[in-house]
Amino acid sequence: MIAGLEEPTVGSIHLGETDITTKRPYQRPINTVFQNYALFPHLTIFENIAFGLRRRGIKNVDADVNKVLELVELPHLAQRKPTQLSGGQQQRVAIARALAMNPDVILFDEATSALDPELVGEVLQVMQSLAHEGMTMLVVTHEMGFAKGVADRVVFMDGGVIVEQGPPSQV
Image (cartoon, rainbow, N blue to C red):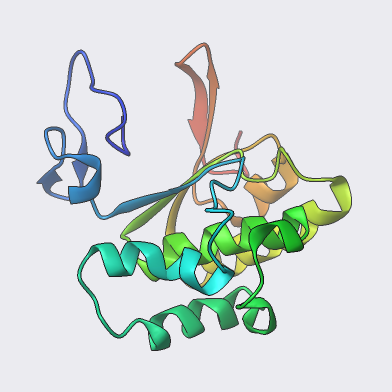
């Protein structure tokens, strides 16, 4: 619902003071990083990241794309295709693509669940870096150590119902 992919049956969704309930997904300053990467296999890594920027009508995307490639430590792979990267590298590209759009919030939908255990660390490191830089993130995860290490607030849900919430040190 926050991303705009589902409509709430009751209530409203606010981002700060702004009601975004009726805004279309592309009108919200929110990007989502899915667990399955959702990269275009026929595009290079550079073009995957540039895709959303170009859809917004931005002509010169080089600086923005290179900036996020540096952030996820993948500038040397910019001309490769997604199938030429490991799962962890592909997920870092998905994060870079989300960041390139300069969102107010990034939603992470179990962003590490499809990765081999040795690759989880590299993606969590990028997410932890973003959290420390002040990026607002909503993270669905089973990685409790990560959640406790970077979260301001942890919410436990069961069947869509909040069971417990609060600062990580208290829950």
